[in-house]
Length: 60
View 1 (tube, rainbow, N blue to C red):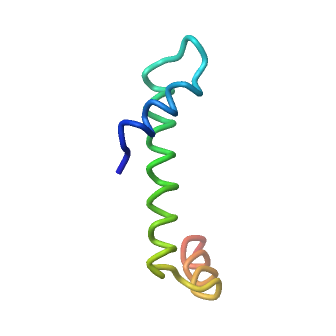
View 2 (view 1 turned 30 degrees about the vertical axis):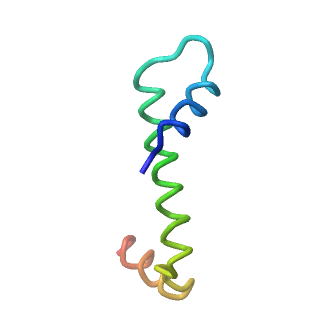
């Protein structure tokens, strides 16, 4: 979940003019990265071997 301070920080990184779509895209990306980091810290990950098997299924 994003915080107000994180939102302010990200808005400051944007150029002077930007679209709402650019802002939303950046915020979604940040949220996904933070979720991934939290999952990793909790040990909620799969092995590289499991990942390879999943990827194989996608391309069949």
